[in-house]
Amino acid sequence: MEGNKLEVSINKQSDLQYVKDYRPQTEGLQHRILLHGPVGAGKSSFINSVQSVVKGTTSKKAGAANISGSSYTRKYTTYRIQKDGQNTFHPLVLNDTMGLECNSNRRKKVYVKDIKQAMKGRVRDGYTFNPECKISKEDPKYNPDPTANDKVHILLCVVDASAVSQMSPKAIETLQDIREEASDLDIPQVAILTKIDLICPEIKKDVKNVYRSKILKKRMEEFSAAVGYPMNSIFPVKNYHEEINFNSDIDSLILSSLRDIIDNLGSS
Ligand SMILES: Nc1nc2c(ncn2[C@@H]2O[C@H](COP(=O)(O)OP(=O)(O)OP(=O)(O)O)[C@@H](O)[C@H]2O)c(=O)[nH]1
Ligand SMILES: [Mg+2]
Image (cartoon, helix red, strand yellow):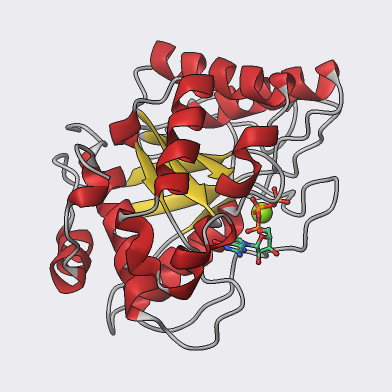
């Protein structure tokens, strides 16, 4: 994997410290990471993985599902990460959303509109997404007056590496549309490719092989070409999903992707 970030060797402890020490430049501001992407891509699992790795205890807060046609996650939820032994939280929050279902043009349009409103901070925590109907301005969970803390600071597109080659033109178009909306709002965008263990037996055996996997590089290039994310803004991830114990290499990859996400946040 020459010439891209995968070459960089990971130092788990320094990445963990980096994440824990991270502060937005503006006093009192929290940075919000908005996850979006196709149904079953691993959005909720990534949030669980991040929370577990940063806290050092396994947590299963964001409900993760077995794959079916429709999104398991329905509620717009903010996940915070508690600081070690304190009743305070890291100034970095992750927002889970409903998965993209591309089975109709209507659903595609509703999805783009809802994600756009979420990026603007107009969707309150606890809103239940309706794939047939965008959030209404009369909804009690509609926030007409978002503050800087309500707004999204970085958009994180989550895609299943084993499904990249089979993404429908509608799904690709939707991810492109959302990227454009984010650009219009000056929100930086990055992506993670999950389930890398499913595309490469070497990675399944040892996650460290992520740095050598040709098939992963190919999937990243395919995704980059299809949706338009530059290669240096796509990060591979293996989520915790059925493991009971921590694995240092999985931790390292999660932390390195989180560090990369933070590095793309820009200054605010
Ligand atoms: N092998 C493998 N499975 C994973 C990985 N990440 C998630 N999964 C599994 O993929 C399935 C879907 O994961 P979720 O985290 O629920 O996906 P989601 O994007 O939140 O899905 P929706 O809420 O339905 O949109 C679950 O069965 C997870 O256990 C991974 O890195 N590798
Ligand atoms: Mg989910």
